[in-house]
Image (cartoon, rainbow, N blue to C red):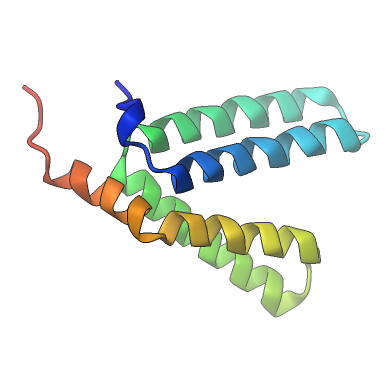
Amino acid sequence: MIEWERVPWSLWLYVAISIGQIAVLLFTASRPIAPFVFSIVFIAAWDFFLLRAVRWLWIGTVAVGVVILAIDLATDTGTWHGDVVGAIGLGLLLLPATRRFFAANEAAPAAT
């Protein structure tokens, strides 16, 4: 179960940005809608487990974000606004409040 009151504002903002990016693509791209619907469902599920404080998922999200941002910057294949949003997302995931949120979950005993 998600402990709504424990989730830091930075993680809520990251979730809003990640869902918002897919929604913007859905409304601005002229492509088949099925991949976008799948993307929204996938990102919503991913964000749900981030809000549940799944530490390994948070670590993976940060690692993938760093790699994608580094590739975009090194090859100049990304757009400037995509790179800025990616950097903001990484910043939100690495803020002290977000790190404490995921660290606190790691220290909690496992339920039997």
